[in-house]
Image (cartoon, rainbow, N blue to C red):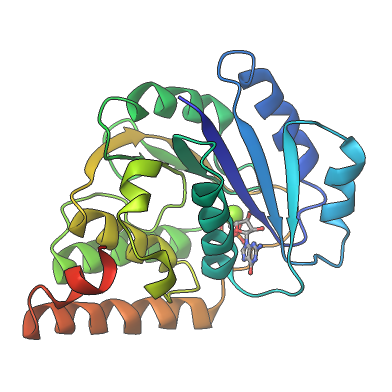
Length: 248
Ligand SMILES: Nc1nc2c(ncn2[C@@H]2O[C@H](COP(=O)(O)OP(=O)(O)O)[C@@H](O)[C@H]2O)c(=O)[nH]1
Ligand SMILES: [Mg+2]
C-alpha cells in the first residue's frame, strides 16, 4: 500500500502538532505521506505545520474558509493526479479520529481493489467519548435518514474517518460533486456505492475534541438534510440518473 493521509484544518493550531506526532509513530509500520489542507486559518495552523519541517508532510494552502467538501475535493484530485498513491485516507485534525484505529483500518484496506474502509461509530465495538447527546442524536439520525432515503446499508454515513482505494476514486466524477458541509461524506459514500465499492466497516472510538472549536453549524445540518432529501427524490424519480452523474 502507498497511502496518503488527507487532513483538513481550520484553526487547529492546538491539535495538529500532537496528531502529526502520533502519525509519525505509525509511519514506522506504514510509511504514508500526509497532506494538511488548510483554509488560511487565522491561528497560523499552516505555518506551524511548515515550521515542523517534516519531509513526509505537505501543506496545501487554500485562500479562504471554503468548506470541508471543497478542501477534500481539491486534495483528492491532486492526490489521484499525482499517480503516487494506492489509497487515500481522510481524517479529522482535532484528535477525534484515533491513530490507533487507523492502524486497524489499514489492515482491512488492501483486501479488495475497490475497497472503501469506513471508521464506524455506530456498530458493535464502536463508541463515542464526551460527545454531547445532541451531536450523538444528529449523527445517528443523519445516518439513519440517509440510509433509508438512499438505500445504502451502512452504519456510519456521516463519519469522516475513511480509507478509499485510488481505484474506486478514479471511477468517480469528483468534479461533479457539490456537497460542501459534512454531507460531503454522504455524497462520497453514495457515489462510491454507485461505482461498485466494496465497503468494510471497522469499529472506531470517536473522542470529542479537547482543544479548539467545532466548525459544525446549523447551515451544515440544513445542507445535509436538504441534499439528502433531494438525492433520495432524484433516485426515486430517475433511477440510474445518479449513476450517470457520479460514475465515469
Ligand atoms: N480546510 C477546512 N477544514 C475544515 C473546514 N471545516 C471543518 N474543517 C476540519 O474538518 C475537521 C472536522 O471538523 P470539526 O469542526 O471538528 O467538526 P465536528 O467534529 O463535526 O465537530 C477538522 O479537522 C476541521 O478543522 C473547512 O471549511 N475547511
Ligand atoms: Mg471534530
